[in-house]
Image (cartoon, rainbow, N blue to C red; front, top):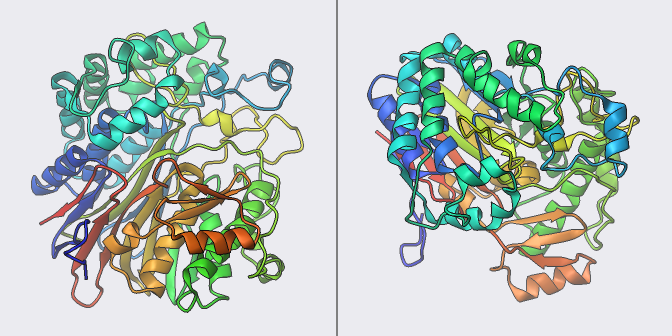
Length: 526
């Protein structure tokens, strides 16, 4: 139970429907959609559209998304891959000449992969939606015109990420007279409202084939991009087969590669070899760091677009691979980091929805970096993602860029089932942190018996880039213990990740939800 003498919030409970997002107005719009007869897919799309405006540094209709859907009356979990591909005409040899260090710069037009989010939204709606398509985008269009108050965490991120907006159109739409928007100021983007109007009227074609698509293509071609109309016309989200693994007798569901959900499943297999409950704080932080190093090492070595991958999901989760990784973990000594050239990035939004019929959606949406590439389109003010920065230029790398190839993705929605009953819809934001964050949530909930809110509130740490990042409330004695084992401790200068979660009691049907205090959002139900 929540300690009512301490800061924080209680879990939100309901027997019918629930939504939790990282922004108050997104939660409110999604909840109203449910009240008005929409289902979980409808509410997720309506909330995601709001997030495009309320957290423009985190997501955009110029970005990508992934989703897991558990339809009413269907015991299967469905996975949607809404990630875009590299342009079909991209000249890889020229890119190697232009970027001899092997890294595609964040602010380059070549970091802009084809945006897959809108096609995924439309596909999900056509398959499962119940409300009228156009109605789902009207609230976002309204707030784009009337303005949306900038909330506190968003304002903090805006100030930190504003240096990424070095494109003239980006500065025109996303800076306030050259400065970041501050908490309480009203952010408007009437040009984006017009884009929402066109998408509402014409569906996915209103984005890809009409003036909105032309606006994007013209900007990218002006900057030297290889993007062509045929690339936009051929964009197609895919329903793919989800992958799963077990943890403490429950089944954890993830989208398959090119997402990093398999990294969580690798970590779960490793964690099951340890008693995560009896560890003291220093042992727990150390063990989680060592497990994550092994899992992320496998991720960076092998993960890629499945059409181009060299190893299978089954192999990565095999006893032989897990046994070898587990044998490298020493509780007394921090291991060396495996070499990784994957770029660090912290920016994503995630939301969970369960409707009154039991349909559930786990949904994540991103532009990779803060304000993505920083490039915005001149007519409709759409920020374009920098997801192509995840590609490598080394011909021997599994994630090497190639025409029509999808890059490795960090954004991962998750679900939890007990037998054939859905018991959890959860996700953790924060770029590379997401797999560790999901594992931390599972440990807190399933091993330690925490409620969703408690599991999200718990302190966080993350081993990355040669350091063990810890949130500032870590005890000095714990930090000293970890340093003695060889960890380089770095106190995080901003909160580590964020998350949302809805847990359903299979016996009573009670929905219990939490929303991460590291963000501005909240959970709500009825």
